[in-house]
Amino acid sequence: MAGLSGTRPRVLLLVTGGIAAYKSCYLARLLVQAGFSVRCAMTEAGARFVSPMTFEVLTGAPVATDLWGEGATEALDHIQYARWADIAVVAPATANTMAKAAAGLADNMVSTLLLAFPGPVVMAPAMNDNMWRHPATRAAQRVLSERGVEFVGPGEGFLACGTTDEGRMAEPEQILAAVRHLAGSLPPRPADAEELPERAAITGATSWAGCRVVVTAGPTCEPIDPVRFVANRSTGAMGYALAAAAAHAGASVTLITGPVALPPPRGLERLVSVETGRQMADAVEAALSGGADWLIMCAAVADFTPAEFAPGKLKKDVLGDTWMLRMVRNPDILGEVVPAHRASGVKVVGFALETEDVVARAMGKLRAKGLDFIVANNPAASGSGFGNVAHELILLGPGGELWRSGSRAKEALAPLLLQRLAQAAAGVGP
Ligand code: C5P
Image (tube, rainbow, N blue to C red; front, top):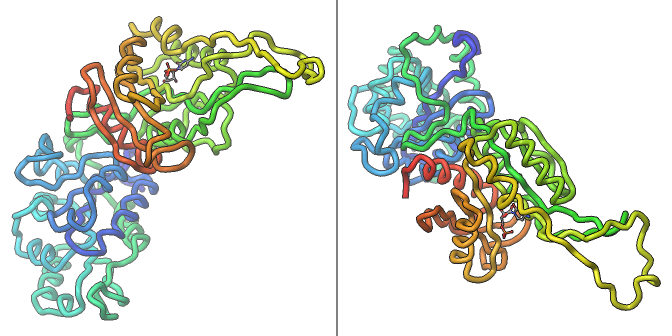
């Protein structure tokens, strides 16, 4: 990726209305994984095949769909992405969009961005074989090729219209290869090129890029003796998904984890493994002392810990038929450790696991612990649960309910929750 002196090449992915749009989700992911900074715009028809939300999650940025500035990309100047990008990729490129581009029409977000974009363009056509062979499409392709547009595909294969012929969109890997090739020969970006903060939500949300985020996850284990402990059913799945999503969005993430059976998420700044609530309190204290912009307390910290630790295994014949285990309160990390750090401006998110009066009880905790946000969840509700299953969250702020997620996989929930948190912190969004 030469030519851009250290900064990540910026790819504008333009998705038009073909069934092959589903393959562009994978293309978006490949581009991000290959180190490109990716933004996406879609035609209305494209957005009927795949939800803009999918690309929003994959690219971590708003998807431009509406030329008239309504809806999610309200604050997005309609050609901002054209000024920002180094390379534009149209995938799938329909016959309609090819014809418009060849004629210089600008009647939707994609055709307008294409007309406003002066840099190199890759097109991956996808259409019915007769449309592809039509003289109008051939003429459009000729015109576009002469102007320097690079075509990838279409290939032969099974088409959505039921025939097997030429018209199938090239595979995402082939398109990625073409983009990589182009990126290698890009001239240096002009000094006055449009700057969008990396992954910033142009809707006004703050960016996670460069944020110092501390996430706690999992249960804590409170030892009774060398072989026994008191713990809870938290698996760490939600906290790990949040840490992974924050790292993916460019945050510098410290994950403080109780004992779980999950592999560490990729891209963490620091992983701190603890066992007990006391150790977790000390780790949070140390992380906040080092400076943090967000603390996301997702861990299920045990409320009580055995009053004494027995250095040798307790014998059941000594304990008798009924064993009274004396427990004492663990430090309340949010209530007791965090307040001393509030002056630093750290934004604090708690989690409330409730099985009754979920919203009211969570609001009570938000107020009692002086939190910025609380995420209420009920693992017993239908569509929710412990571990790597679908789950439903309710995000609350001091003014009440901000967002209900609906039941989704935890990996899918995590980036959405981060996005809502950033928007709420920036004072935008619902
Ligand atoms: O009051 P409750 O334990 O239900 O509050 C849950 C929230 O408080 C979670 O964010 C959890 O991580 C945090 N917590 C804490 N210290 C504890 C127990 C829970 O910070 N000892």
